[in-house]
Image (tube, rainbow over all chains, first blue to last red; front, side, top):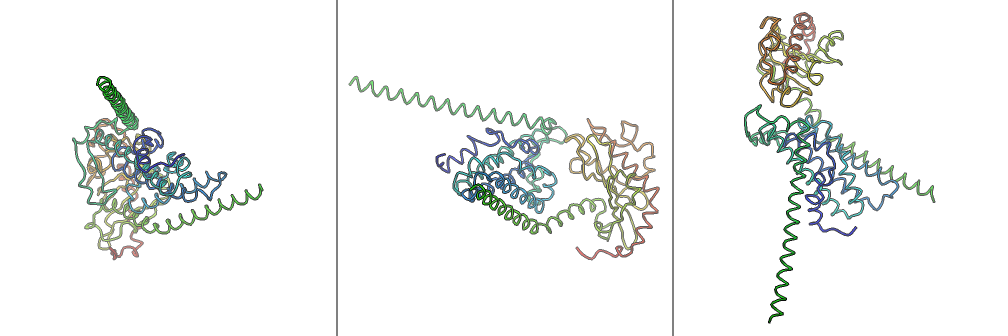
Length: 237
Length: 220
């Protein structure tokens, strides 16, 4: 694999090869906890932390570990980072930990993490691996937060409710009420809502990509026309 | 050659196991106290909601009575639990009892029921449930004030046969689209009050037998 520039790594993680929208990995937590922004952000940040940490550690030891014991070592590292993240969340954001519950521990089974360890961190230098982990984590976290935002807005009629669980008492005032209690679209909070919102997001990304592709094709044609006219003019004179 | 590679790989694997174990142990030791404090604070917060600071002068979290074995089943509890004793000026003024309503829409609904010594309700809170978000979860105070409608009620208020949701001929509201959840909660609160009517004297005696914890709370 050729060396990638940081710009490409960022674009890969956030858009072209986004873990949630393109690789469709790690859907279990993605769909289960994305019923509000604060839940989504909490799990997204924890995943980002674990992904960046495990990529960094795996890249550091990539020359010392032989292929035969590679996978057990990766799993050990990922499990360690996940457990550390779980302990830290339990210590400092206890109420959010109670809401997210088992899904924090389930980060260890998120295929994105082992996937990046195997596909990227075990083959690239430390800096690039850390950056790749951070960007993949950020891509995952952003999709999670967008789904959380849409489901919270449609289902509960609020945005950014209960942010104090993550950012301390001052954040309670961030809550935006869109409409009254009990008028929300219940479906959005229930599990099917998560699948639907994710489906629409994937469709939206595909539409945008198709649009970019069309524009690029048109520009290419335009360039061709211009050059042809230049040649024609050249021929007349 | 093969045995050498096996030995080398086992050593690498063992080394990593050791390093990760050390890392985990240090994180665990570093966060242990903070986690214990957070767990206590979360448990205390709910207790203090039912009996605020001006209604007691003991440490609600530590002043407990173990529930005698045969009564666990009456309260719907699967494993041993404690009753929190509320005291003011050395007198027992109330109890906070844990209870489980097993007939929720999706399984158990865990409650704590605060009862004053005269048998009236100081308050009820749901501490754990799996009810439908947006419908049944309105039994949580965070979502809906419904649970406050128990405040100051007792076994004679309303009369026993009206300790039901309105759909069953009682006085308590049900939610639009969710009757099962509030029905389970109302009935379990009623049963807990009944339990207190039958065994309250016993609890008071047991609580007074422990004057060591009756001293006013010093810390905080």
